[in-house]
Image (cartoon, rainbow, N blue to C red):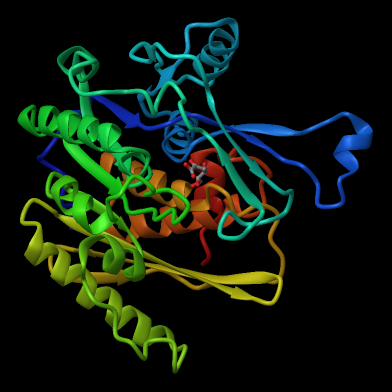
Length: 346
Ligand SMILES: O=C(O)C(=O)C[C@H](O)[C@H](O)CO
């Protein structure tokens, strides 16, 4: 069966929209102070998506805001060398956002420190950007729940660009990536996200994010058995509830990533055309870098739907993309589409 996006979009650019962040990586022992060295990576959830798509030979474009200075020019050159179209990057403001993450740690703990207040992206306001120009030639628009978590103004900008993209019949995807360290401006995700998600054709996240952001409840005893079949049943219910609540939505994807000692167990589900697909389960007892694995899954879904793969092929590609990212240091994948296809679990 062909996929749910088949007749939706002509094959234009895929524009990822979000804040570029530099990740600074101190080591846990403080050796960086003695060595005068702090490793870093270029990141930001939506840029990680754009980077993967460009590497996989799709027409990938990226919108962010950066200050008009020499550092931004170097970053711009770096992204263009990766075949990312940066022509719509908005130059204003004074800062590039940073985050510090202790080497080898996950963003879901105290090892994460944000230093992104007053960044150029956080300074975006409605009516500042000509969206007609930015969206010219775009057939797919991707954003994530990190953007509206930054400030009320940025949430309003998200709404503005989504209205413009919807009016142009552009396919829209969203990653419900919940960052509890953000959302500090007096609004909760549930106040903002439903109004943005209503524009989305493809919604990716997990059942807990759907609860926090869209108010779709998760069974309270879900962790009791730990069985895959119970989690998949929950994925089905959450997906059906999302589809009922958001009539524009054509596909919902959920990931399940559980810590297992120093490693993880990982599998995913995709609901589309009234059917729940699930991936193979991947297991590993060690992981190098979890950052950006979810972004890679998102990019894999876009890759599959854009290339008209069927739903199961799309899901297996996206899952292998996310899983293989766990062994790559840095924010984005460096594996080609062919390498990922070869890594799909038989
Ligand atoms: O938290 C953010 O805003 C980031 O973009 C940092 C990481 O790039 C992101 O969490 C990875 O998904």
